[in-house]
Each structure stands twice: as structure tokens, then as C-alpha cells.
Length: 252
Image (cartoon, rainbow, N blue to C red; front, side):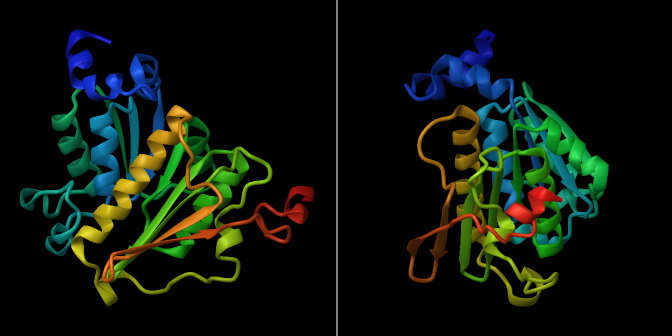
């Protein structure tokens, strides 16, 4: 690390759980973030500020005026621009020492598998079950940790799927029979700071996984009721009959 980085990351380096060795580990890390909306915004901002060396941003959408109520990585002047380009520019202004790879489009099949293979951690900041299911299956195939979050109305949830561990549950263990679709922010709304709270927890869990510190939310689902400002935790277990990570799927 150069002098600028030593000063920039000094509050991390002071932490005994991180120190200089941990910060160098973050600088050498690569994180894939799917979605540059309400969740992806705080996730990307905090991971960039924390010094994660390479962030791969994936989104196919453009910035709309209605996004700005909660998608804090974008600005009014960015309306009409691809979200990944708007986010890239903001993040590089925040921290010019990191590398940003902006993918304006959807990753599928071999392209998705390849990006997940290259990543140390994948962060799901998408807003639909189809994308979540596809992302989960690819992370299971590549045995890559997946930090998952969701927020709608005044509620949110976060968990970590340690796909590198054979006994860990995956996303389909949690949502076995869900089909694509479901409620969206456009239909039901979302209180702006709720996505910030959930996204910030996702960023924290991502850093913990990269650093190998603390107890992650692996095997636990953290639920937020922001209206009552209450947190609950549910235990998650691997489903032996899961179509993605269960015994039968491993035999195919």
C-alpha cells in the first residue's frame, strides 16, 4: 500500500480484526454485484470505500427519476444513463484506487458462471426471483459464497449462503417452490432508508466473508420490520431434497 492508501484505510488498519494484512486482502479481492438499484447502491459505495480492489457491476437498466428516492449511487444528472456507468463514475470519484468493471446487460449461462468463478464473493442485489434462482444455481455450481438481500415496503431480509461449504443451505432451500414474478417496489413501494439498511448489512457481511472474520449470517436469515424497528433471526438448514444443492442434484 502507498501512503495515500495507508491514510485512506487507517481506520480499518487500526482494527485488530482487519489490520494491514486484512486491508491488503481486501485490495486483492474481487466482488461481483448483481443489480445497481436500491440495494446495490449502498453495497457498492461501502465496498468501494472499504478498498475492495475489483468490483464487477452488472445491470441492464438505465437511471430513471423515480430511482433517485433510494438508489443513492446515482444523481439527477445521470437520468437516462446506464446504471452501471453512473455507478462506476461515482465509485471511482469516491476511491480512485479500485478497479470497476461495468457490465451493461444480463449475465447468463457460461458468462455468468465465468464471472462467478472469478469472484471471491457474489452479492445479490437484484429484485426478482428469476434472477435470484439463476444466480444461486451458478454460485452453487462454482462453490462461491453468495450474500443475499431483499427489501420491499418497510421490510427487509439478509443472509449469507456459504456455497463453498458442503453442508450449507442455498437460496432454493429457503424458497423451494417460489415462481418468478412477485411484488416489486414499483407496485408496492419501499421506504427509502430500508434498502440502505439492508444493503449496508450486505456490505458488512461481504467484508466479513472476504476477511474471514466474525460470525456471518450463514445458516441464519435476518429479518427487519422497519415500521416497528424490530429484528428477528430465523435458522436456515440445508434441504436434502433441494433441487439445486440436495443429494439428488449432486448425483445428476
